[in-house]
Length: 295
Image (cartoon, rainbow, N blue to C red; front, side, top):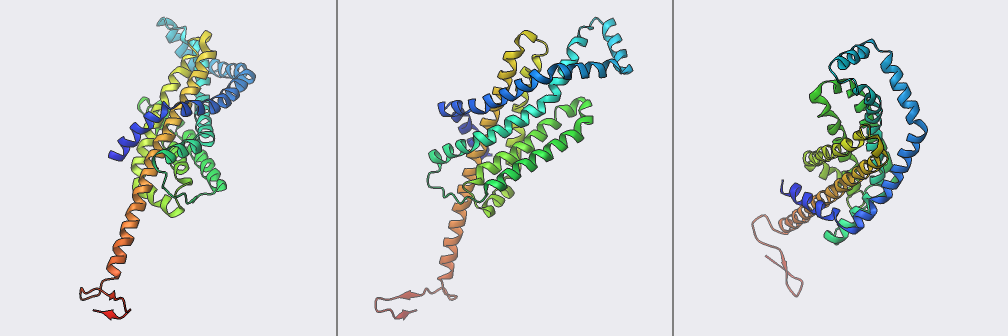
């Protein structure tokens, strides 16, 4: 718990560094460009498709009639945009995560390592190809989990639990791996994961809930159509900052855990060397200046 809280506050402090703020604009520009480009070409078509699907549903028409009688008929105008927004939100979230992992995480990890752990050896236990495979496979598993869990989102409590848990698991898998890829050997990375998997997952889940905040701004664009062009980039930038903060949190936690692991290994090696130099009877083996053996 101490390591969790210590790394949290350090990550918060690092988020205000000019270098971190400047780095956040690179994935922001890329994600906004893709989002606005796809919206320009496919937004109207997506809205038309959703509206046709809603109008062809008898159940939805009954709900419309009930809402109209209840004086809430205006909700019909915003439902289709909300459905499209909530449908593309997972794509935007994952895209933001991947761009941060690709463009920011190596620089943020180096920043943490240079300032806090300059003497920590870089063993480079993960190649670039393996890192890419790890990220893509984790993302695919997260998307599969999302698709499987969609029917459960209709239950009010589960929609508040399942998406953040899935985002948290994905964030933990990607960010923790990237934080250790440069400094830890393969064996050290597995040991850190084994010892700290629970706390790393907690960091990922908390980051997943933090990532829900931009969704509120993103969804409000359907209600405030005039401000939609401003709200969408703002939401994407918030996603970027949340994942940048998560990257810093994982970097501080994982590198501190790796340093502690190596300190334990060195201590164990020193104790083994002392034990090996001791004779069974408790006497020690010494060499005099004339190289004779004294007991």
